[in-house]
Length: 330
Image (cartoon, rainbow, N blue to C red; front, side, top):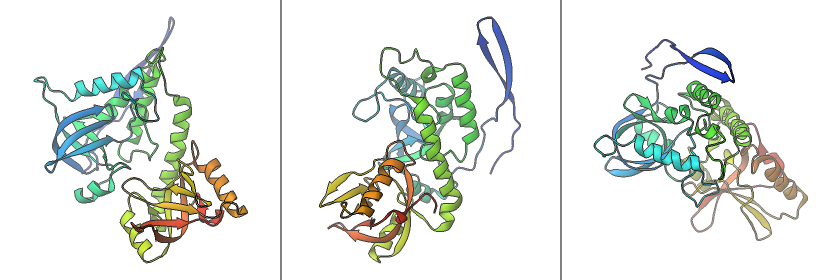
């Protein structure tokens, strides 16, 4: 049930030397939404600013908090460790700590209103983590992190269905007053992230996901992450199909005279195979993938063809023969 609410005003002050202007911004107050919730889960570990562990159904679950991406506090990945990342991790640990030193209980909210059992399968990322919002009491932690400048709004894998406007508003307010990651002094003397490059790229990918939500689903296009069981069934029966893939990593392996693309994830194995790359059509495929979709490109692409099984583990794949199998449209 959605509880209607009014739009209270908040005042933001912008200062420039002795010149001061006061702007009134209409800010929607976050109350009940339509996302499916699981209440009263015990936090057992705060990993960093955007990842926590909880107990769910008697077992440990790792949550990757949706629509935020705090900077890194630990090395080992391809993102730089920054002062802001270390501070965000400490802030999160304090946020989820109660006065007696114990960790909080939280409510988990998913970005759709599907039944709980569906959400627990549908809202999992490439590493098996649950993708969700977390509420502590009446407060949405994800929004709080953006409002205090610990994270930008992160729509790389799709805009928030429930809180898109709120995220945009909170990010703009944090930028306007140079909070945390928006203040150059935060990471001064250390590594930084270039949001002038990242945010336009995330926004491009978000638009592609919006197109999939509006048109791709109705067209019957399958998502590697959401529809993996259907893709496996199609492979067993060698059916024709269209699959939405994320080719951000580009060509992963050159082998046996061909190019191999890992278009799935650790938990959702799905490959694209380009044989005979010396062929002119295959070279055109490789160029298109590397220049349009890989790296800071569109990432997502609809891939059509016969879905078959490969290898001893019978994983699904599509063999690519020409560029007509790739499309920006479902």
